Image (cartoon, rainbow, N blue to C red; front, side, top):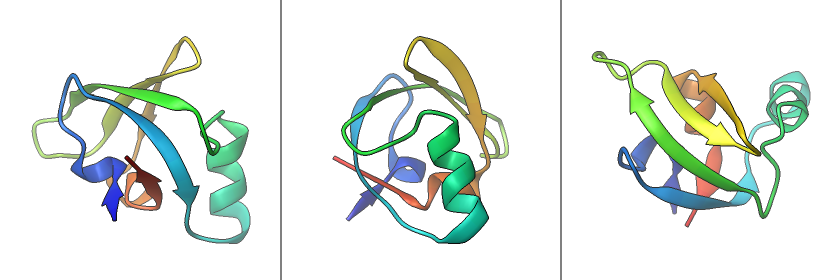
Amino acid sequence: MKTLKQAKIGETVTVVKLHGEGATKQRIMDMGVIKGVNLFVRKVAPLGDPIEITVRGYELSLRRADAEMIEVN
């Protein structure tokens, strides 16, 4: 299982599944990160947190803990 946290800068990945539960999972889905969506990894901060991605035409920064809940391929 590969997560968004493990994706490299410049890589485009597709969301396979969202792990987690409750408000956290709902917040990620509300930002447009749902099954089948392509994500482009733009930048990773020097200490690894946050991760900046492009999703549905806009830039989004996610905490490393949230990125770990997003399974990609």
